[in-house]
Length: 553
Image 1 (cartoon, rainbow, N blue to C red):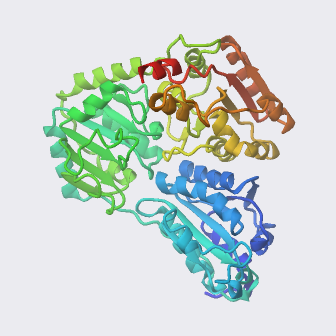
Image 2: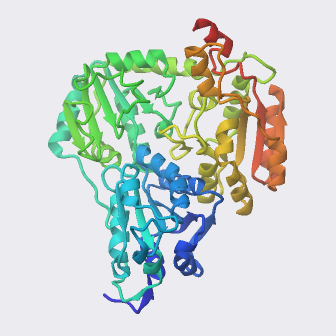
């Protein structure tokens, strides 16, 4: 059905509304002024950011926490290339996202016009699909397709470029409709084969990961684990998929894996990868599972057929989203006395010991007791975000995730993600506590988005662990080139003054016992807050100091 004559900008916004979009992140640009004008009275919340990378990471965090495409808009050239950091995260992490890029006018293409980029060539490796809308009448078609591609199979980012003159063109176009989600379901014979494999196993192991989960699937799988008493692990930075205090939880398969868990995965006689690609980080650099023929009997459940058999040849491949697969298992009858029940209990006990923070450490600030304080004083439904760096080890190893949708962190290991992700999470769930963990190096990559939290009244709490170095790189440097420090020292601003200058709350922690009261004051302030924790650079990991790493090398 045709509509009245409208501009391309109006049609973009109408298509977004038809697909249920309630919020977008952006950095404005003259190349898409017509869209900004159409957003003026649209009812869509527009979150104005200070750098396009942060805007794209916010969209990724929305997609990560909702399962619906996060929407980001940026201008051409430098704006688009800045946003590519968030695009890469969404691609590697399988997060639905749509990036709209203002483009040069159609008549100026192929002349290397001002800020011109040919995005199909530039972003093909970063996105599931890159399209350019040449005709405003096709906007409903392109936007509907973008939502379908971003959410189907293995989710991921889509890029749509918008020539500036196309957006001001007035046309008649079809009325936009919402995209139709596509779902894949496991067959009855596959479920029967899975049931047989599970009941014949002596040492089964589940590893949960990926996206396309839901609150219901999270609860249903916990029920399945309880009935079957199977050991359950979560892949890297997907820890919120299973309650860590559930008696079946065995720990996370990620960086710095518990050696006992790694041994159990290698020695399993049935390994079930549910939603996980089991890429480099969760597989301990592809050492836990042999390629291409695993020693373990492998069942791989994944929503995209192109992933099944791409790295690991499974004994049973099931093309289904985790939600649909878990729903199909509800009626399975568990054995009266599972042969592996004692093993499951032993693995959970091992996890509890592994995730108990150490009390000691170099310097006047001990991260172990701080993590213990957080466990005792932060609500179970709090959302934790982080970027990348050795500081994140404290969160991943010692925080016990209890509930679904309480983690927003990049499996791609991208620095700078934590703060914009926290801003997005708080905007999405204003009643829940949102805690950003960041290192000093990580924070400064997108620290300017702290003002975005201030502007929109989003009282996130940032625990900024400042050790004055690029910690992960220094650790590797001391191991490979001991004593030859190069390019890893940092000079930092006064982060407390930084927070206050932006209109937020700031406090410095230089002793362990000062952390708890500082956190409570930050919470009570009702403002976006930075708690700067001065950590001795020697405290590079929970188990080893920099000196120990250097001397061992």
